[in-house]
Amino acid sequence: MLWGSLNQTVELGWDFYLPVIMFVGLIALAVPVWAAIGTAAIVMLVMSGDLPLSLVGESLFTGIDAFALTAVPLFILTGDVLVRTGLSRKFLDVAEALTCFAKGGFGSATVLVCGMFAAISGSDAAGAAAVGRMTINRLVESGYPRPYACALVAAGACTGILIPPSIAYIIIGLVLGISASTLFLAALIPGLAILVSILVTNIIMNRLYHYEGGGLMSMSEWLANLGKALKSGWYAFIVPGIIFYGIFSGRLTPTEAGATAVVVTIVMGFIMRTLSLADFPSMLVSSAKVNGVILPIIAFSAPLAEALAIMGVPQGFVASITSLTDDPYLLILLMIGILIAAGCVMETTPNIVILAPILKPLADNIGMNEIQFCIMMITALGVGFITPPLGLNLFVVSGITGESILKIAARAVPFVLTMLIVVLLIAYVPAVSTTLLPEIYQ
Image 1 (cartoon, rainbow, N blue to C red):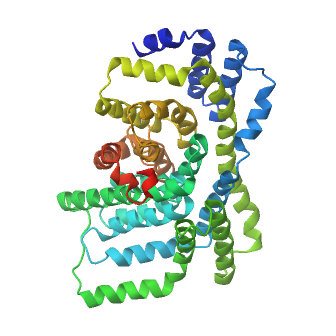
Image 2: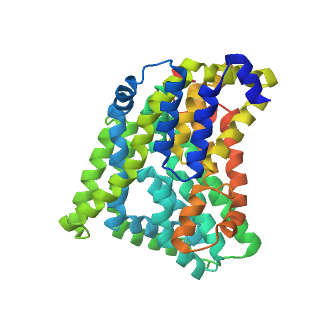
Image 3: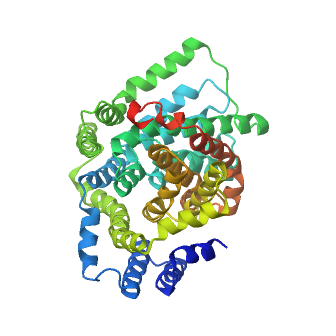
């Protein structure tokens, strides 16, 4: 019904349907996403004849010719250096000291360290892999079933794209022409709300099933443990401190903050003697591989976006959806459903470059603030990362532990439900994402 209405609105033909079918088929065959997007874009342009094919090359370079994108490889490299220097373990020590007084303390510490790692790397998959290797075996030793321990890490790692600085917000800002610094500020409360929802869910599950015990301790004992952890690992917080202060004070752009964080982390690694020149080749290659997945997708999205815009697909999508219902509450639910479904089958970057230009006009049509729309979109995509049965983070933790994806997915359901509550709050209460912004954005 939807595609029929869209076809009547913009008179779409095989110059649209064939590239879409090819894209889905290539993804199903495990062809790299950038190649699938590029193939679909080129076929669409050739069949429609709306733009000369000679412009594709120019579009590829202009699509990634943006200073803001320089922040992406810098944050990826910072996260990699953080793991190699052992600074990430200092985060875990402090998080454990913060929560050791409570029942379920190490589970809560795992969620907190996911948030700390997210505040530096900006990547959920990297966080799931790094934190999972440090904590899953210890969670099992503490009394958690292995599938639940995997689900806990997978859920906590979702904060990688939700707590600023986030690569996802840099990309959506570039796609929609919105300042990444503004999006970082708007995402602070929603990102922390997601983190708290995961913490609360774990505490409730722990009390229901008695996964992990915890000895009571006096305030003086707790303060002594925390002081000891901070004394031995306070310097690890220099890096997130630089990033947050630099960006939110306006003294540094996200790119400058990322560059400063890389240099500081490397210097700290040399001082601690946990990093050497011999580590650089493998470290740079590892970061380049991750960056090499993201940038081609952004590049090939430019000609695809141009083809879709000329064919009137975004406008037709809005017309077809609003012809079914004009209730803004139902339209928001529909957008959330689309984003969660997309998030559980594809990575963030292709979802942003494909869906943001299509859904943004619909959000504008119902009067949604553009900042609120961006925060809602990224948060909903984050929920998709642990949505059974295809969430990306489920595959990451399954890959590092060998645990069945279906068993992990079953244990992830409570986290999906509580995160969904936060998504609905963001979608229906603009103040959640605009409170910290200047009045012009509210």
